[in-house]
Length: 492
Ligand code: MG
Image 1 (cartoon, protein in one colour):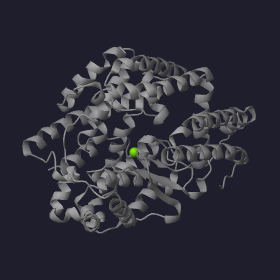
Image 2: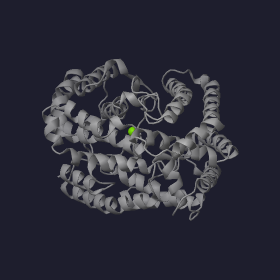
Image 3: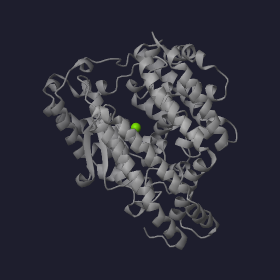
Image 4: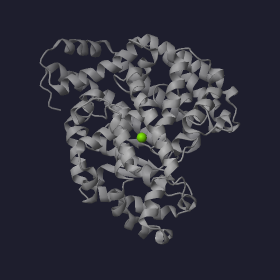
């Protein structure tokens, strides 16, 4: 990388080893999800934990820390150089402030909690998971206190996933979204917008679907030598800490081909972000997507705002009909309504783009109450069910389809969920800022769309903090009204 500053050059030279370990660690995780036989898990967990320790040791190495501190005193850094120091300081802050004993205890509790959660979910019994969640909440509170915050301990946790995001931001977003979405749901109910479609029950041939997905992604366009698609139980994207090797995975349930189709387009959005990062930033602390929220804005933009649009359907319907013969008896209208069913439901991962953010609101409120100590963990399932009924009008029959449905709390990921809603909000801001998106899709101008995203967002990697990159790309910080306008226009 063309760094001017001598101290930055020295930092980047030292950072290469840390980058290499991050890269190795990402390959190990990818392999665990895609290839590894079940019993490999013990050795793999050990290897990953040892690599994490090594990274921490290198980061905290006295001479490396001194270099970073010295760099902070320099005045005329470029934006890229400032970004490098900002990102390293973020990592250092965590390592310096959170004692290793707390990190080790957290790792131990969450690995036990994962097993406890899986068993509790199988038996639909929250009680056996509750002691683990209590411990996770306590430890998260300790971590928040060590990291520090201005207004609410939850802010310290949010910042781990989304630099600079506060509960004040999230409250402000939901104060617009909640009433707006609920109004829209009432309208859709009154107008009789489709809540189901026979195609949901239609089985499909997996290999035909794979071929269709490859054609759909080829239509948008991707660099073949830098990209691959595999199969895993939970779809994900990994950039392996470099724009030269980006991989997505897809899952193929036996029926309802929307899931593999749109999860592939979703992951493609994540992949494109990593693929279009400026090559000059590769192997540096800023050669990566900047945050979970900005990353999710890219996946949601492609999945929902492009993938589920009428204009995109015109391009992909012929591809789908060629590979899936049962579609012969369905019109384009059928496909459009099938792709855009709106149905208040219990399970977040199955939620449509209208109801999805209400699921996030529910989790956000409960997390904030738990972290503030304003509610007992034992009372969470009852609160969950009440909130679910109030927000979405549906009530879980048991904990498995209620409070136990998501894996995140067992991983200790408290403060993570709001980044999903933030991603939807940013995606709609981008859609607005881009102008005539629907016309570009209709004309098949995918290169123009990709170029817009590359120029304003992707190429910068983590050079600018999330709020700044969003402001640079869209002219303002987080503004949820574009998401509401988009939804109201689409679901007319
Ligand atoms: Mg995603």
